[in-house]
Amino acid sequence: LDDIIEPVKLTKKTSYQDVGGLKEEIRLLREAVELPLRYPELVQDLGIKPPKGVLLYGPPGCGKTLLAQAVAQEVEATFFSVKGPEFLSPMHGQSEKRLRQLFAQAEKKAPSIIFFDEIDAFAFDRSRATATFEATLVAQFLSLMDGFDRRGQVVVIATTNRLDILDRALLRPGRFDYRIRVRLPELADREQILRLHTTKMPLDEHVQIQELAEKTSGYTGADIAALCAKAALIAVSRALGQDMNRWPAALDKDISSRIRVTTADFT
Ligand code: ATP
Image (cartoon, rainbow, N blue to C red; front, side, top):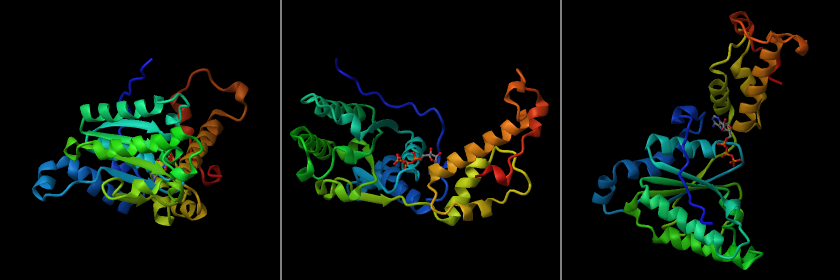
């Protein structure tokens, strides 16, 4: 059976405002992706070729996917999202075929962004490849990237948290010309991420976001999102009453007004 690659419908509207911190990363992404997609004639008049690929690298959970979704939605590009490990089909030639389908679909539905999560799953240094299919897959990927017409308005955004093991050929000019490091959030970034993930919460007046930002040194954005979600659930649970067997069958307004997320809930 042919598996047809379909674009991903992004149900939740993600914009740059939904990304906490990462201002320089957003600026670079807009320059590399948004500018050429939005103003192709400007770029053409300058006689230059816009980047075909952007590599986002850094530790997991720091907003790489979020950034790619935000840029795709801001430019209203068709978004194809795939994961590197999905292409590790041991069936001879299957993965190469899927890759070709993916690029063909993206060109057809342009302007498009192909989001390749964990590209290192197959695009690692070929001398490390354990099977020939892995090596031919990298070769196929490179030839597809070289092959598509830049005016075709297709951009590949790939992520990795192992820049060190990537096949160096990916980094040659004309491929991933923009490489953007997405690092662990610093204090000011953590404060913004905390604010984003608590905007809808009824926070107790004693909750100091600044203080929470200081306490969460070393946390990724994903860790902070999880911390906030847990805090909210603890607060809701408290409002409902500690005895779970006596939780009401239906909610009344009174309960929602009793929810208060306190500092102690962020543990
Ligand atoms: P992975 O490498 O594991 O795919 P990633 O870097 O792509 O990780 P995301 O999937 O973008 O990380 O982040 C996971 C979740 O963490 C997001 O959906 C979001 O809720 C939260 N998050 C991470 N970074 C940020 C950020 N900078 N601002 C707001 N939320 C963030």
